[in-house]
Image 1 (tube, helix red, strand yellow):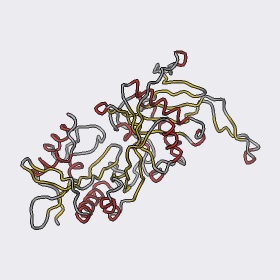
Image 2 (cartoon, one colour; image 1 turned 60 degrees about the vertical axis):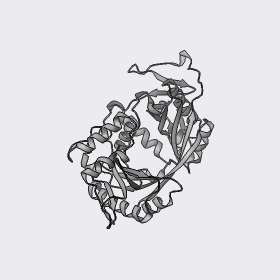
Image 3 (cartoon, one colour; image 1 turned 30 degrees about the vertical axis):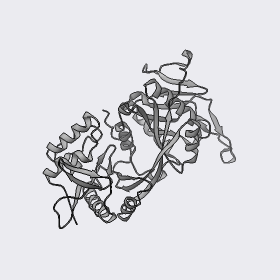
Length: 379
């Protein structure tokens, strides 16, 4: 079996078959990839430094020795936030209008060969490069051949994800006396009890605050703990920015305004330690919009360790529902680690129900910038 890049003629029908053509932006991607020179930068956001070569070099086909026509294909390409996606190998049918995808997957042997070549290419291109920290692939729970082929080629199982959905029920607007504005004049979302939720878009003056919040909420997190410390905060935020349709009001931070408390345990008997200073960011969320499909995606939801178990989780989800409904959406979609039982209980209490499950496999590259000196680019 020969594994190689498709010819330019083959790519003209192969790329449209592999890319979902659901919007004008999708057609823009196809048109660009079919006409660009290797060094040209991609015209859509999310990977401002990626070139056409980065996208097409990992597009591979399998040809039998007795037949020149490709029978299967796989695609590894950059994704937002210095990550890369390895797609599932697909079988190809040769119709009157070019290539089409067959519902029957390739054999496990062919899948393994395609994945091995894609990983070899991506390692040579991206290992140690600032353009990629993580390559990941997503498999359905019953797709044992794909999962086995990934593991045979050195990808580690990262997490089992449960995808959840919550319909947006009518929510009464907050009372007028609970509405305030921050120093910039941007309205707070809502204030209740001792906490306040405010819109904090990922602009340069707010990035350090987001980095600190993310670092704090990742501590002892049960949501995909295997990835903690394996990606830079800069690229993590860049990935969030590029998810779905960027929506400024979906970037929300919760601040605890309760009186400060102190740790007076024996080990701190001489000097009480302030564990809950007034005005502490206790958690937050990020919502990305998907207007074409009429839903919001909750792409980040975190609470710092000292604030867990105090009811903030359900309040954040209620605020997410209020914001999504205000933006005219009918539901919220999110994904959570199947082993994160506390989070699953909070989601259940907020009327989320399971849709499906997926398993994520990954290969990590060097984290070139573990800090946050760079500024993610906002669309």
